[in-house]
Length: 491
Figure 1 (cartoon, helix red, strand yellow):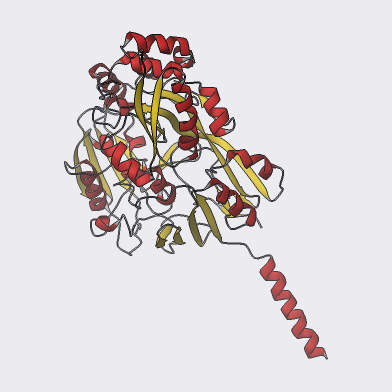
Figure 2 (cartoon, rainbow, N blue to C red; figure 1 turned 60 degrees about the vertical axis):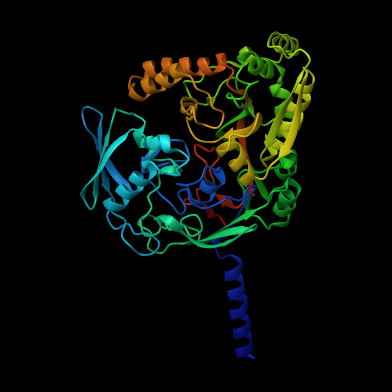
C-alpha cells in the first residue's frame, strides 16, 4: 500500500513539474514567405524578418529602440579625418558550422557586397568603401572614399551581415551565420525552423527553437491565433480583428511604429508619368485617410514625403498633396489627358497593398484615371516591378530605416533621376553638425514632395498579436526583424 502511494505521489509530482515547466519553443506567424534566406542577396523584408539577429549578425546591430550597438565588432575607432574605421572584433565567435569568424570573413563579406557583380539589394550602402584591410585576425580597417557619419548604422542593416566564403554561395537555402539560432529546416510554402546554437558567443537565448509559419490569408491568420497554433504574429495582417484579441485575456495586442513608408510608387521613366503634372494629379486624387481607414482600419500615420514621422527631422508636408479631385482633373487636362488615361497597378500580396489598391483605384477613377489591377505574388513583384521596372503604379511599404537616399539612385525601380537631389544626399553623408543635417534633410523631403515622385500615403503601423505569456517581442520596428534574442515565456 505504501509503495503504491509513493509511486502515485511521484507521478503527480512529475506531472505538476511538467505543467509548470518553462516553455522554450515558439511559433511566429508571418504573412509573407521569404523568397530566399540570404539577406545579402535579396530585397524582400521577409528575409530579414526570419534571419536578422537570429541567424546572421553584422559588425553592428539595431536595438529595439532604434539605437545602434556593437555586434560582431566589440568596438571601433574613427580616424580624425573620418575616413578610416578600425573595427575590433569579438574573440571566440564561430559560425554555425563550427569554423572561426575572423577579420578575413569581414573583408570577404564587405568586398563581396560592393563587388561589381554583387547582387546585394542595398549595394549603395557599400559604395563609399575604398579599401578593406585585415590588420590581424581580430582587427579590420575600412577606409572610405569620403567621410560618412552614418557608416556604423549602414553596417547594422541586414544587407551587411557577415558571411563566410565557404558557405555564402548556399546562404539562400542553407544559411550559416554567427547568431544565437541556427537554420534547421525550410518546408517551402509552410515554415522555416531554427534551433538554438549551443556555441553562441553571447548570452544564450531563452528559447531552444523557433518556427516561422507562413500564413498569407488574414482569415486563416486569425483562426491560427485563436486556436493557439501561432504564439505570436508580430505583423498581424487582419487589423479589423484586433478588438477581439484586446478583449481576450489570453492575448496581448502590440501596437507600435515601423520604418515603413507606404507609397503609391510611380514609374518616373514612363512616358506618361515622366510629366510632373500627371504625378501631382495622382497625388491630389488620393485621400490618405480613406485608405488608412479602409485598408488599415485606422492604423497608420499620413505622410507627405518619404520620411518617418517619429524622426526629429521629419517635416509634415501632407497639405502639399492634399485630397483635391478638382485640382487633379485640372492638372490632367493641362497635361493633355482631359479625356482620361489608363495605367497599370501591380500589387504585391500584403494586406495594405491589396486592400489599399482597390481604394486607390476607385479614387483615381473619380478624376479620370482608370487602372488595370494585377495582383502579383511576392516573387513576381520582385521580378517584374522591382527588378524589371515593368509597371506604371504599385503600392509597397519601404521598411528600411532612414531610406530617403533611395531617391538618389536613378536605377532604382521608380527611376527618379535628379542630380540636385543626388548632390544633396552627398552633402548629408558628409555633415556631422545636427542643425546642418536637419536643414539638409528638410530640403531633401521638400524636394521629392515638390517633384511628386511618388504618392506618399502613410507610415505603416506595426500591429501585432501575441500570447500574453510572451515577453521581449519588439513593439516598434526600427528595422525589418523578428529579433528573438530577448524573447521568453513568463510561465
